[in-house]
Length: 460
Image 1: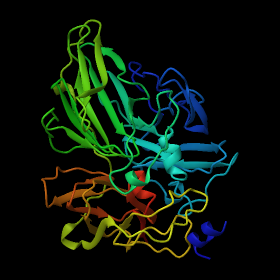
Image 2: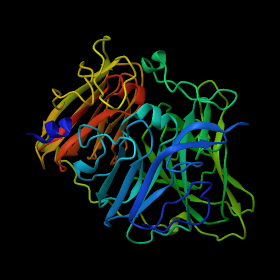
Image 3: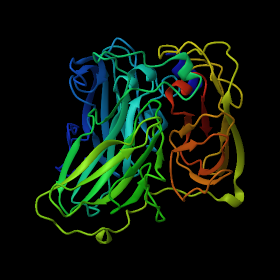
């Protein structure tokens, strides 16, 4: 019996400043994470039906250290099934948390222990991959920080997790998705938050150097972002250090951050007491919105960004483009047809999207093969073609890639796991197939993922 058939049948020290209501999990590498119902005060009445690892707060920031083993036991107390995916982490396939593809879903009061050793430092995150739409939309998205083995020179760190929620005037949840939204750009929330707060302000020492770790864990929204203080620089993208100086985003030329993507900034705090660095978002049809602020406190430490050394590179193999085989993937609409068989993990009730003009037939479908089979250790170029007017953040599990070229824009030299495809864009990415297994490959607008725009690549 093949592995897939079998499945179908059956810490690092953080800066003390600026935690801002985001709890930090224990320093122990052996932890139990309890998926549970929660409530939270967004408006005058508490919002019931949240999903978190805490009964009354956002999921904690989990942290570890590059090269040190982690053991995370996830216990499900919900009546719905779940599983946990560690987004962006190049770990063993059986620890990836994708139901039916790498493990069976977790029922109520069932547990699964994820054991892995992070090969890369950086900013990552975790979220369910079963009942994905409902559980993510209701709050189960958290940041995962993997620290470098040695201190990299910051005085403190600030984690910001950007999330929308769909709430009515009383704070009760509206439906997480709509048929119209799923067939277009997605169903947007109406309460924009940073760490579940609306415009939180975090204090950091004046004149200090802060590592700002920013995550978009929304199910739909693509943020256009910039910082109001120019004394900052981009130091990492999707967990991996940048190798070239990138221009700082501005109000006129903001940074696009799609669902699943992360960016790290080095920020030199202003010298003056009370001065602020604002994280500002440009949202469609709305005035500029300050999502969160960093505020200077105390006497200036008079630090300078030039004191920082480049972040140490992660041990990522770069593709040999002279010997790379090309595979093409077309992302677009599909006629409505047979509903996907998602087993215990929920379906939205319709199909709108496809890869290579074939919609995903479902997590629990036993006759689904890979979109492509890659040979272990070889280099490949994947040509990603967006044949729709909507943007798609395309995420590849278990592997990383380098963007090579686009028909619409210049691409900076990055190492990443999520590529935001623009309208009518064709992007080529290069990778080394150096992690064996079946790796999910899908759009991270969850309504697109759950209505056909998903599949997997096989590395053997």
